[in-house]
Length: 228
Image (cartoon, rainbow, N blue to C red; front, side):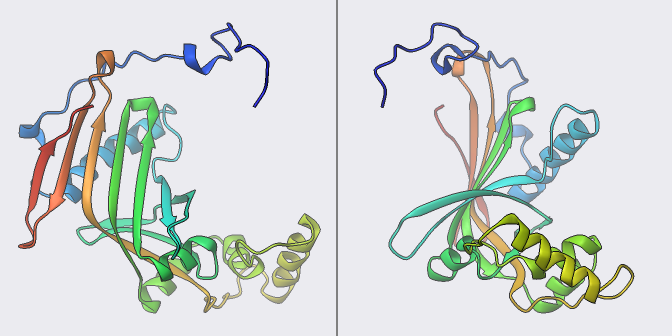
């Protein structure tokens, strides 16, 4: 805390920062029957906005986990696949998020598409992808990223940046460009099977549209409108 008075300058004062959303609304009748189909529609539009330079990395999503004691942690990762079974990302299985998911598989995802006044919020359960699926994706990664999966003991403490760079350089010497890099046994994917998927559309006067799909035991989905 500080004794300084809040800045009256709206450029630096968060209380004075306001954006009036004027985007077209989101109506229940316009939704797809399945949330992943609706996500596909919005993701295509987000990707198109990215091509025009108005949105950066539409596949970036905030992943929130909690450990066995309930302590939360959050980070941004890149979604690499989505289908009717959910959302997939890849990571080191020794990382903090992976250890959290091993102890507590419940997870929340957020796609923050602020430039188009949209968000998608997901709650669900994580499980590891199969090794064949992991290997197939690993082969599509750039050579340097494949080496990076070996060089980094993600979330562990290291002495310096030089240590990380030296590990990567040693691997580059062992597996030069063009030579196949083996898939690390400690690295792989998680698939998030959604329980709820909320589509948030910014509107004027903070009266946003929030439509949430919730899974039913029979596999169908209920759609509810939430107050903003």
